[in-house]
Image 1: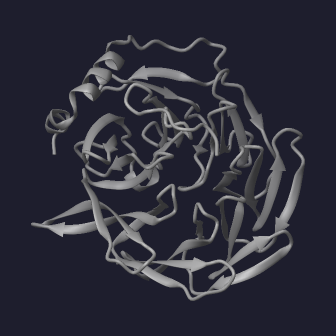
Image 2 (image 1 turned 180 degrees about the vertical axis):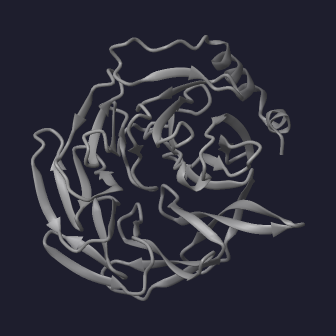
Amino acid sequence: MTRRTLLGLIPSALLAASSRTRNRKSKPLPANRGEFVRFADPTTENAVVRLTAPAHASFLPAEQNRFVSSREAFLVFSSDRSGECAPFQVNLRTGALTQLAETKGLANRAIALDDKARRMYFLHSDILEEVDLRHLHTRRLAEDVADFHVGGLNNEIVIRRQNHLERLTGRVTEPLVDDVSSRGVVRPTGEGCAFCRTVTEDQHEFWYAPFGGGKPVLLARGNISCPYWRPDGRTLLFLRQMQHSGFVASELREVALDGRPEVLVSRTSQYAAFAPNSDGSVFVGASRSKAQPDIVLLIRDVQREMVLCEHRARKAETVSPAFSPNSQRVYFQSDHEGQFAIYSVNVELLVERTTDEL
């Protein structure tokens, strides 16, 4: 689908908002904004801000991890700017950078904020630690950890040790399931988590493991990726790659926990990755199209898309697009300038504001 066709499908209110955005002249940010550089996207002329300089590699946290505080206006990420890859915080108003901890062997995408953005969790040398963002005091939580996720109503923590999934409560771990190939993604209600089992290189299974005992439930299988819980926790959203007339189409689907068949949410313009906003009304996707490697908004109710900007990453799967908690900005990463850098696009004229924090 061409950009002209996509824009022809966008409601007039969105087009008007987009026009107002494009008519604003792009200009460099003041020199006191750290590494921030504002430029006009060559495809849409929307203003894009590069938040980190490509002289050093900078990485957003993994998909489904919370990494932005809209209320306090900061973002956490990892970077090798100090020589060793370490977790950093950038003030989104001033551009000021703060290193949050000394690390060795940091898993550069294994970083996450708690729901109040008061603590950050990170993984280095197979050790899961927590840092108090006000005082920068660190505390060791678990060892021999391969990956983790924190979420739910009470900041539940799920860790993966080799191919075993466990729930971490204080110093006590509760075994959940074995034979897993991904971390668990905690359900927003805090009652369990979704996880992945790999069948072949491009064939996977998504399962649900309840906390406190109970048998795991198979949710979906096939060429599927990028699992996200709907914000109310009732269904699991994901991408399914489908063969259609000789080409691979990417469909956004969801499945409930009660055994009902999965349903189509929307067809997409070749999404390799996506994320919902905090109320699940809008999605942002990264297209794998070689001709149009774009960041795209998808309005759920009308199943229509709008191109925000190019990402031009070597692999669209690495772009990791995500909304801020208040749905007013989209963040993504790209290596099109050499090393990975982090970018931001303002969407306040296109997406209704949602609650800043949980």
